[in-house]
Length: 115
Length: 110
Image (tube, rainbow over all chains, first blue to last red):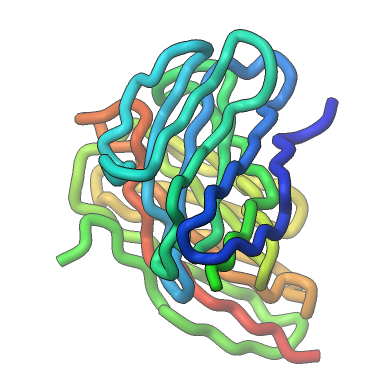
């Protein structure tokens, strides 16, 4: 049973380009969370999705950032017109169910560098 | 004051030593997570606790709900245990968002 898979592991973009980060949750998991970790800082919640639904995007900047978790395929975090401040590690976690009974399983992260 | 406080912030110890990392929180919680992050690496969930104590190999996690405190212990520490250990709590106000501690950077010297 493969763990949470994130790709790419490393992504380099120039300012103004788009970044797409993918997260395939563990098999059977329908809850996906995205977190951002800035250099030398802790993780910050960005968005929580279930299949085809955004449940909470309160941690995600309102502009340039979007997330989806389609019925088929991975969850995607999309950052348009990237800026240097977007350089960070983006972690995805999945859970089989919501709430305090849902243990989280994390991916290896995608490290975005904006030149 | 942060809602989740970890101590110490940094810890250096010799191989074989018994390690304790503490986590105190100020909110009502439904669960507490201990996670491990290696430099440049991913995050591994070590424990999820809502009461009592859990053990996995050389790792032990305890939680005291009344005192709002949890500890992570490592017995017979090894250099490969060197990592950042993070405490995160699931607040009762939100059954999915985690409140994260700042992490404890542990270095075990051979």
